[in-house]
Amino acid sequence: ERRVRQFREYEFERVGETLKPDALALACASKDSARFSAALLRVAALWERALAVRSDNVAILRLAAEKMRGRKILLASATPQTAAELTNVAAETGAALALAADNFDDLTAMVKTATSQKFREIFLELRADSPSEHLQNNILIRRAARKGGVKTLGFPTVRFTDTGRAADDV
Image (cartoon, rainbow, N blue to C red; front, side):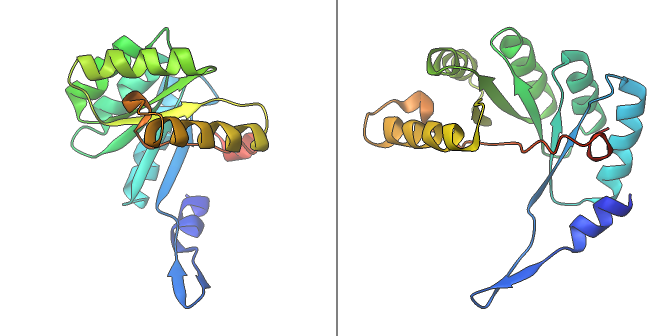
C-alpha cells in the first residue's frame, strides 16, 4: 500500500509541465489467485487511474477481470495459446487486452482473431530480450501500420518493465 501511495503522489516538472504516472501494473508472480485477488482489491482502492493486471495464468486474469468488472483494466497478456479465451473474457467484462507474441506472424494472427470477434480494445506487446530490440520492434510495428498498410498492427503498443525484485511483484 505504501508503494502505491508513493507512486500515486509521484510527479515531476519537465519544461514547465507537471508529469504524473498514468497507469500502474500489478503482476502476479506468486501464482496464488487468492493472494493476488486480495492485492488487486487493495491496489484498486488506492489507484484511480489506469490499471494493468499481469499474469500468464488465464484463470487468474479471468478472476481479476470479474473482480474489476465495471472498471476499465488491461489484461496482460494473451499469448497465441490463450488469445481466444482471453478475448472472450475481456469482451464479457469490458476489459482491454494486451496481445503478446514473440514474432510478428503470431501477433498479427492474434489481432485478426480478436478483431474478427468484433473486439477492438487491443494493445500489442511484441516481446523482446533487450530494450534496444524492443525499440526496434516498436519502430517496425509503427512503420508497418502507417507506411506498409498493415492495419492489424495499428493498435497501441505496451511494454512492461520487470524489476527483477520479488518485493515489486505480488
